[in-house]
Image (cartoon, rainbow, N blue to C red):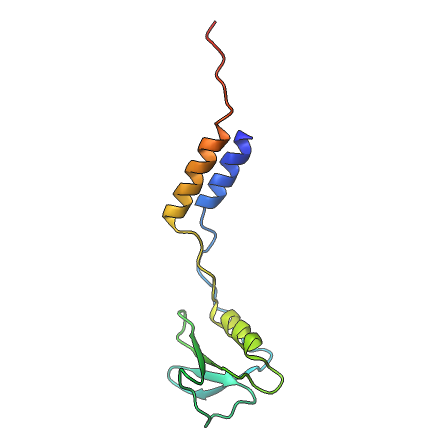
Length: 126
């Protein structure tokens, strides 16, 4: 039990993210077409370059690694619903959902430590 608590606590404290890696083939399916530069700006194939790209018309995703921007129209495009486009845009920009904060990790560590050692008894001295 104690070993399991220590293992879980250590896994919570270890950060697995070393930063997203650049992927040269992020658009290998040709889902995105470039419509502006700089910064490199993309819209889904099938979405005309002259159509509106304001925040009320869709969502912008920006890659922090290289600055490329991808626009997902709120109504999607023919054959591509907006949810699928948003997922593909997140993959293209290397999006990772935020993990637990240091404070949350400390709380979990303390809880595992207390509950894991709660049933431990020390034998009396000889």
